[in-house]
Length: 222
Image (cartoon, rainbow, N blue to C red; front, side, top):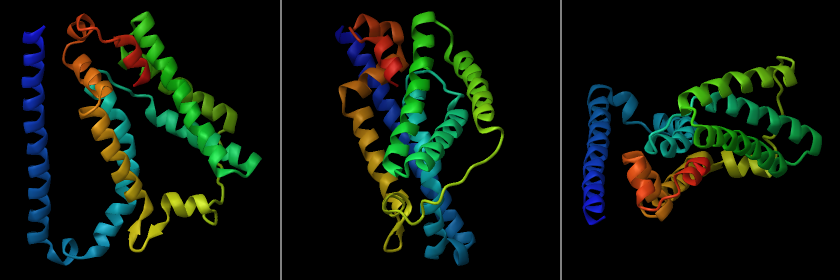
């Protein structure tokens, strides 16, 4: 058991080094851009644009980080996002409550994720097959219930809008949320037992099972 834990710590150390290499590479690219295009990359406007648009992509990446760290893949998330957005719209139009609409939209994603996890762990279907099939299923279901028509809601005058996508001075609120959630996910993945189990499963699923990790439960939660 001690040998397995030692090997796991060595793998974690090499992982940190590779992550630091990505950070250095990204910083070097920004420095290069500042040198070659100072009129753009030395002004604050472009960074405000980054802070407004990048968090939405980042939120998707944060969710997929745990899936990929576990050695699995999820191809259904674009369709799940579309379904969640539609459920948010319908719920808000019906109840006029942003919070309730948000809860229902998140719950729809949780249900789909639970189905994906159950099919992967209980039946043994590869995650790429399950999530690819779920993508087409959810996309078709969304088109049926929406009749292929887009719907919009006006939430820009609500307090929730100001909280989630408003501005705190010059800083977009979504960037603050993204930083906070990123920090939370970092500690969950690298400083919490659950994250240790996720990484352990990604390194070697059978070894993790031998060490007492409930692989099925962790996969379903992720």
